[in-house]
Image (tube, rainbow, N blue to C red; front, side, top):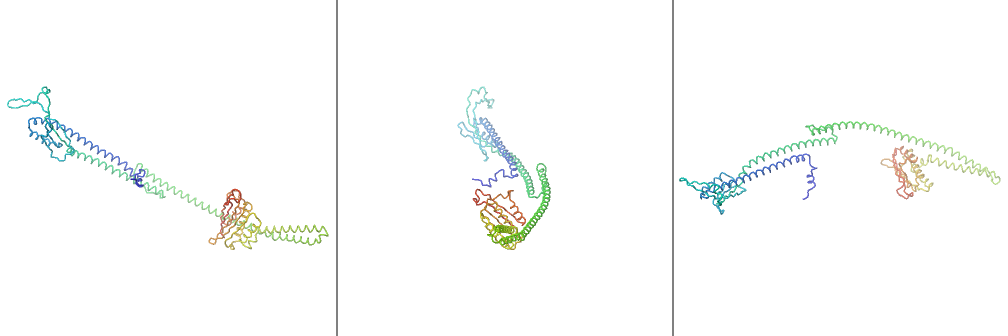
Amino acid sequence: MKLTTLEKHRFNWNNWSIRQRLLLITLLPVTYLFCLLVWHSYWSYSREINEEIEERGKIISKVLAKSSEYELAMGRLSDLRLTLDSLIQSEHSIVSIDILDADKKIILHSQSDDKDQLFPKAFDMPIKKSLIWIEVIGNKLEQSPVHEPARSNKPTQIAGFVHVVMSPSDLQRKQQHRFALELIVAALGLLMSGGLAILFSRTLSASFKSFIDACRAIRGGRYPVQIDVTGGGEIGELQASIKEMAQSLQQATHELENKVSQRTLELEISRNEALKANDEKRKLIQKVQTIVEEERKAIALEIHDELNASLITVRLQAQRIIDLSGDQSADPQQAKIKEHALSIKQIARNLYDNGRSLVRRLRPEVLDVLGLQGALEEMVTSYNSTYSSCRFSCQVQGDFTGMKNATAMSTYRIIQEALSNIIKHAQARHANITLQLSETDNFVQLQISDDGKGFTPNDDSAGIGLVGIRERVVGLGGTIHIESRVAVGAIGSDEHSGTVITIRFENA
C-alpha cells in the first residue's frame, strides 16, 4: 500500500517541529531503557525461579529416595504416604509425588490440592537397595548399615523410583509482587521523564513560537515587538538579541525614512526646478521660433515688396529698351541692344520666380489662405511634381480650422523638415503623412513614414534636421518617438526597412 503525499510529508524528519523532535529524542531512549529494564527483570526472575525449582526438585527427589528406602523395604507404605502428604503440604512447589517399583509401576501417589500449578517439571531419582545387618541387642532390633569396606564388594540393586513433579507457579506468585513493584517504579520514572519532556518541549516550543512571531512582526514592519526575556542561557540570549535587533531596525528604519523624506523633498525640488527649466526652455524655444517666423515674415515681405517690385521694374525697363530698339535689320547695334534687353528681362523673370519661391519657403501664404490641411496638400503636390524618385501621400483626419497660427506653423515646419530629410538622406520610394486630431482629448497625432534605408535613431551623427524637429516638438509640449530599421542589401528589398516618426501634442 503506497503512502500518500500527506503521509510522506508527515513521516519526513525534516518536516517535524522542534517539539516533536525533542519528544522523540527524549522519550525514545527512556522508553527503550524502560522496556530493557522490564525485560531484564522478567528474564532474571524467570531464570532464578527455574534454577531454584531445579535445585529444589533434585534435593527433594534425592532426599525422598534415601528416606523411602527403609519404608519400601519393610512394606510400611502408610508411613511413607504420610511423609509424602506432609511434604506436599509444606512445599507448595510440589505438584505430585509418585513412588514406583522396579518395574516403574505406581505404588504410592500423592497429589497437591493447588489447581493453578503451571509449567510442571519432573525429577526422577532411583531408590537403591543396600544390605542391612540386624543385630539383636537384648530384646531390641537395631539396624546398622554395613561398614563401607564390607559393602564395597556387594552389588547395588534398584528397589524403585521416586517421581517428583515441581511447578514454578508458587515461586512466580511470590516474585510477582517484587516484579510489580519494580515495574511500578520504572513506570513512574518513565512517566516523570515523559512529563518533563512534554513540559520542556512545550516551553521550548512556546519560546520558538514567540521568536517566529517576533520575526514575522519585524518582517511586516512592526518593529516594537513584545518579547520578554524569560530566562538565561541560549534562549534568553536569543530573546535579548531579537529584542535588540528589533530596536536597532526600528531606529534604522526611522533614520532611513527621514533620509528618504529628505531625499524625496530634494527630488521634488529638483523636479520642480527641472519642470520650471523645461517650461522656460519650451517658452524660450517658442519665443525663438516666433522671432524666427517673424523674421522670416519680414524678410519675405521685404523680398516681395521691394526686391520683386524692383525686378518687375527691371523687366518693364528691359521691355522698354526692346520696344525702343526699333528695326533690328537696319542697325546691328540695335540688334545687340535688343538681345541684351531680352536677356535682362529673362534674368529678371528668373530672379522674380526664385524670389517668389523663397517667399513661399519663408512665409507660405497658402497656410494663411487654405489652412493647415490645404497647405499640406499643396506641399505634397509640389514635392510630387518636383521629385519624381519618391511618391508622397497625405491623409488628414479632423478639423484643424481652429488651430492656432503658431501651432499650425510649427506642424507645417515639422512636416516640411521631415520631407526634406527624406529627400536628402532616406533614398525612399514612398513616403506617407498621417495627421489626426482626436475629438475626445483634443490631441494631435502626426506620423511620417518612409521605406528608405533607415538610420540609427540614437546615433550621435543625427543631422540638424532631427534636432530642429525635436526642438519644435518640445516647443509644442509634445512627445516624439522615432523607429528606424537599417535596410539590408538593396534599398527597398527589406519590407521592414525605413523610418517612422510619431509625434503627439496637445492642440492648445
